[in-house]
Length: 175
Image 1 (tube, rainbow, N blue to C red):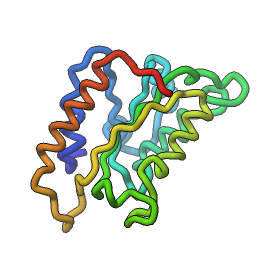
Image 2 (tube, rainbow, N blue to C red):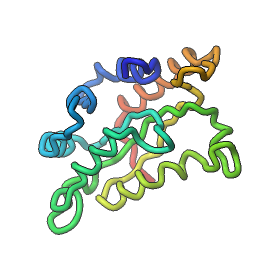
Image 3 (spheres, rainbow, N blue to C red):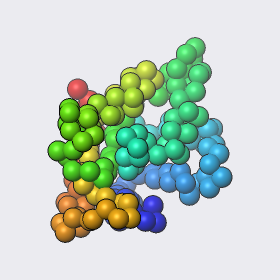
């Protein structure tokens, strides 16, 4: 987060929204050990769970994967008695280093972004959550040596406003 201009700005723009609880996993768990009970309690208090993350090797960062491994537990999220997340919505808000045209069948990254997010959609479905359409900001490279586009700050600001408006509005129903 300290090195990400996009995600720092995204967090700043939503931080003051009412009924918003931001759980920065790396800050909460610097030892990488997720407190499943605390995270499950937080999830119970939310009607909409938002995963905000940079696309990391075509998936989520390791801490978000660890969160899923711990929170989507038998008896809580699925299996006998595991209905605690049923009816909640999952909103994905992510950045991708490549331009949108790189994410297409046969393109540089082989798949559309929606295809790369299928495991998250499948997991949400499996635990009874409704997946909302993802909000994706493309072409925000965060790797040393990759040129940063001249318009990146303007696009981050526009995206941040869309993100804030999305979360400030009454929750949309997933289709």
